[in-house]
Amino acid sequence: MADSPGSAPAPSSRRRRVLPSGHPRPRYDLERLLAVAVEVFSERGYDGTSVEHLSTASGLSKSSIYHHIDSKEDLLRLALEQAINPLRATRNERGAQEGRAIDRLCYLIHRNVEILCERVPYVTLLLRVHGNTETERWALQERRAFDAFVAEIVQSAVDEGDLRPGPDALTTARLIFGMINSLIEWYKPGRGPSPAELADAIENMVMDGHSAQES
Amino acid sequence: MADSPGSAPAPSSRRRRVLPSGHPRPRYDLERLLAVAVEVFSERGYDGTSVEHLSTASGLSKSSIYHHIDSKEDLLRLALEQAINPLRATRNERGAQEGRAIDRLCYLIHRNVEILCERVPYVTLLLRVHGNTETERWALQERRAFDAFVAEIVQSAVDEGDLRPGPDALTTARLIFGMINSLIEWYKPGRGPSPAELADAIENMVMDGHSAQES
Image (cartoon, rainbow over all chains, first blue to last red; front, side, top):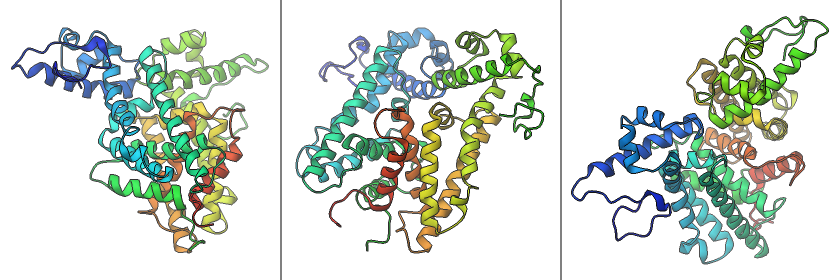
């Protein structure tokens, strides 16, 4: 999040507030509000959540909430950015840009598992978005753009002779990332396989499958 | 759904109503209510949905709604049964009970894709359940029982030498069914691959992966 005058412009222009210098409380409140909001939005749905609900759940007064945000939708955008920004950024990372398509695909699988496991509540919110507001439609568009980006890489890997095509590149991309996204359902930090082991398991399934017949 | 005196006892005992004979309207209303409820629950979350919301969305009066159900939770259970009952039933089907474990696994993949594609809104509701009510906890338990059932089959297929183990059988089962469940995100009847093609694509990925190197 942009929290100092020198950082990059905030994607959500309405949320910029000058924080009183030397006063850490507002920043703490905003982080807390965000952490609470992502849970309440996922639980009640964005439409079913009122600022009243957020106030009750966070213990912050409504006026304190409105000190940080202009609207509930502002908060949704901030929360979604916690998932979308790092996921979008992976597309420009070297591992996703250079080398054979099959290696770029594996890189994206690993990076996405990593980010998802670090930010389960935010990715969960992203995956539950409906599209009733401008912010939700923006999030859906980001998801579609990501799918299209991966589909292009899958197609390139097929063209380079490294992957067998599934029904079509977009379906294959969606199935792979559907499998990754399903981790939100059950992944718990410190329990069961680690993010790196999960990424390996997914890569192995995508590349070689589980049949023992070939070896 | 149980709708005549001669049919099997309804799993949700509170919802039994004697329908006036020769009067199709109540049955129609219940189906309509169910179809509306599953959408509203998925959109607003179960906690965020009131009977008032259901009344507005369905065009049925509250008293008409309470003619069919005793509570909002009743309706949730009815809606969840639309997904859980057929999914649970697959476990007892011949294809899931007889033959080598690898074939039983493939059978379950195909049957689950089929049911999911037929009942997207109901399966979506099932996959969004939180666990705040008895009904939701029942649904979560059904999901866990299903995962455990599939994990056992995966383990048997490993033991029979047909599958290579992933990190562990439960993780492999969850990844496979996570990929299947992700279809709710984008599957549209009559657009893109058919359910049978999707099931084949998933089976192929699970068994052989997409790497072109082996062939």
